[in-house]
Image (cartoon, rainbow, N blue to C red; front, side):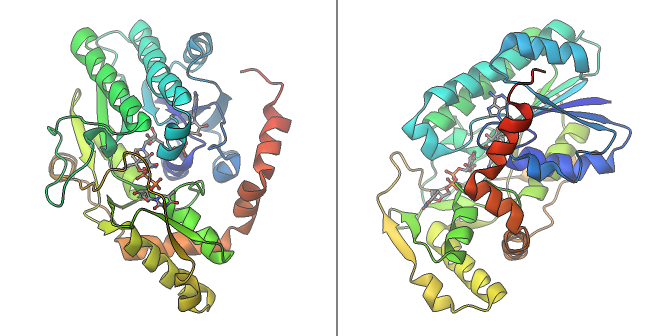
Length: 350
Ligand code: NAD
Ligand code: DAU
């Protein structure tokens, strides 16, 4: 099968490709990625030489380029990760989020609609977020039937894209599936997100900035568990259906940071007190959702998926990964990997 993975050089997309490309040599994987600041080709070293992997640098907001890569690849499965993904960036500059997350998704759907006959057995899998549901209070969980109520330009753009994907199924019969997942963490996550930022700042003895009072709650899931969940829905989920994904691992941000200080101290033989003293409460994020929690009963029952990692095992793996991948960290921090992308791809067209 020919599989187009959009955004495969980002955090979750790269973990997805690292898991599946070696496991499924009979499938041809094509990574379609604009290579924005969030992309890192260093995350794909394990697969880039494999015969069933290719990269095409494409901006999904460019319909001509999308058509060209669809004509070249003729995908039967599209797994759509590509997005602007960081909430704080969406608050500072929402335009790119509307452009990529809404128009980019629309372009991909149009490309599929033009090419896939009703009986083609093809699939558009849309990777989305629990943030479309907005904020929970102290109790309750998000279900697949929870009304959408997004708070940030990021989550509103993802909500819009989910609606368009669903509309293409209902209106044109396009075969689609949607997954809405909670917060991911793990190897190769860009250090703008809470967990890698705190790990790297703790290692450099920089301040650990916690928004508000640190009482906001997120439901954390190890990234490989998310990738396996997506694959289980692709294999066993029902066309036209939505599946929530989460790890039953609700934590307050302040507790996440405390745990990270303890694990970093333990793994590096440092004084945990010194790391804990780096914590600093800072101005809150505007529109900051209080709490996310996922009811993942549907995917567990219908697709037989279960997460393998607990928060404790996943966090330790993650800290160890950042400690033992100094080159990746140095290149991201220094911007070196960007130079490589510009050098190697700057004048190329796809
Ligand atoms: P990321 O920011 O790490 O990576 C995004 C990737 O998309 C990058 O490789 C980037 O180059 C690419 N991209 C951005 N704009 C593009 C464009 N116009 N054309 C082509 N490629 C483009 O994101 P992530 O954290 O890996 O998230 C991947 C997907 O999963 C997103 O759709 C996000 O909404 C969703 N999601 C993320 C989380 C999370 O916790 N990170 C949780 C649930 C869902
Ligand atoms: O829930 C899924 C979503 O999780 C994904 O859809 C998004 O793409 C992903 O970025 C993530 O969004 P969050 O905003 O929850 O993740 P972030 O890592 O930015 O923040 C996690 C929590 O930590 C949040 O409550 C804000 C807080 N925070 C974050 C940063 C970067 C801090 O307190 N300090 C910080 O410096």
